[in-house]
Length: 227
Ligand SMILES: Nc1ncnc2c1ncn2[C@@H]1O[C@H](COP(=O)(O)OP(=O)(O)O)[C@@H](O)[C@H]1O
Ligand SMILES: [Mg+2]
Image (cartoon, rainbow, N blue to C red; front, top):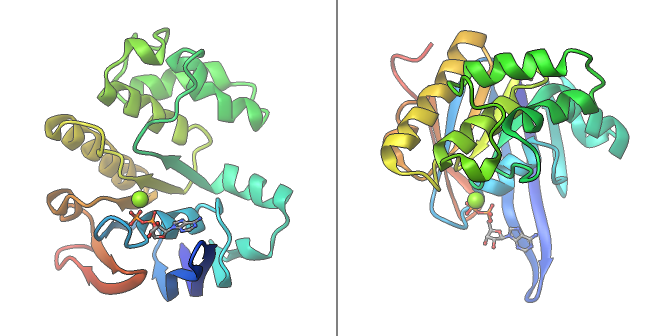
């Protein structure tokens, strides 16, 4: 479960103080899939970065399964983030000098898991890249690279999966496949999924759609058939 309580973020820019996320309170239940939509600059990545613990709020509290991440020091936050959150970005962010399998192994090695290679192989298979583990990112298509990034995000079996415009750099058919995979991982494993996208057709596949405008939540709709 993700809880934001009066969370806001203000940054100092050339023109002075700018509140890029207005005070926001919301709860995302465990296992829910949520699409965050809104125009470019509306605060989608800001919101996701706060939930991921990559940025800190200027005010308010953020709880992941009851743990207040805003109260943690850097080390504890890094550990909690490693255990609870997997993230996928628009531009994949794979390490170019490592193979697909090695990229997937990185978070498990950081966590000190001894089964990194075997589990990495299983994850490569799970995302539909059977036999491609030894390829370098440059030898893979965009859709394949995003699958590797997803496998890496799942490496430590996080209950929360965050994706920031994961299809933004893919053609629409490939994007659909990546969304299929994200929703499958959400549904089959009961992982909470927060998906930033400005593609409304993709957003409509989530249980819930939250729309941001100028750093405000302006719409928050749960799909009728969603549980
Ligand atoms: N560190 C920062 N300093 C100044 N402005 C920022 C910073 N991060 C984001 N912004 C601004 O905040 C607004 C929201 O950004 P962002 O969350 O990236 O929007 P989105 O992901 O919806 O496109 C934008 O106007 C952006 O330029
Ligand atoms: Mg963004």
